[in-house]
Image 1 (cartoon, rainbow, N blue to C red):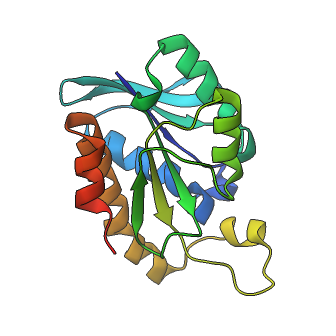
Image 2: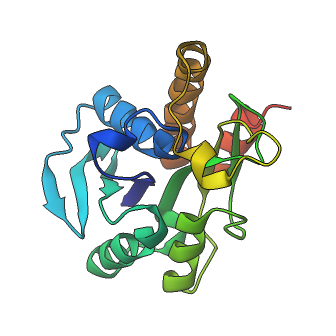
Length: 187
């Protein structure tokens, strides 16, 4: 069993913002695998289904980004899955725009949602899919930048990246995280 968490903020106000790219990937993953995200549990919207032969729980925490760990911790405690079966998808300004970077483990970097998850789980040994959403202009506050909507052209550039992220997550679940890293971590 796997728990797949897309990070974002709840509410229409945050739809299609850079910070909500994790939600978009989870929604596309749900569509591709005919999983309905239609339950409220663990302070999240969740959907349960299968990817290949593996049972999966797809999550969109509704705690707001900086408290994402509360939702993830509750789900991990309930399902008792091993830490390496948690996959988190999130925006990352340190990854080149419209690229993905898969890592097996590591710090949360400057991302408050990831830092909260790692802090509450007391563990960073889980795979994550980092989505390159661009970088703020000089002197632009980071919060203003990540809460900004993508431009029309940026949205078009991100669509294939969202699809590749879905394929990468499916590869992690069906096969192996190393294979997903080799296949999708492009320079």
